[in-house]
Length: 62
Image 1: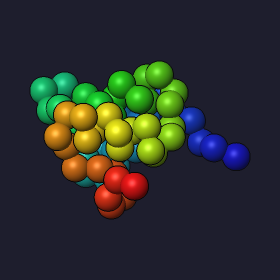
Image 2: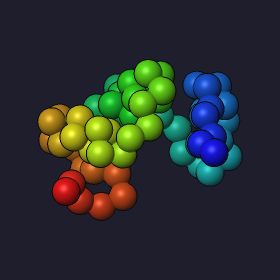
Image 3: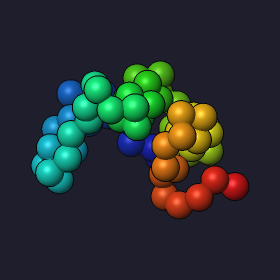
Image 4: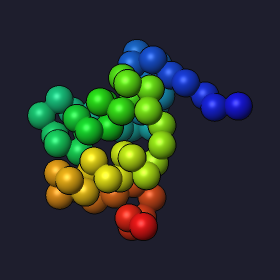
């Protein structure tokens, strides 16, 4: 079962861990886009991050 969080819940979870998403950071904008579109496929996220010359999530692109 996948856990789906809305933006407010995601912000609260990240804040509890000492993190936040910035609307002026390319990496964060890519992550926000995929969260808003409810696309949770790490390969798709990493492809988009690579397109914008950002580091991938959880390691390298395959």
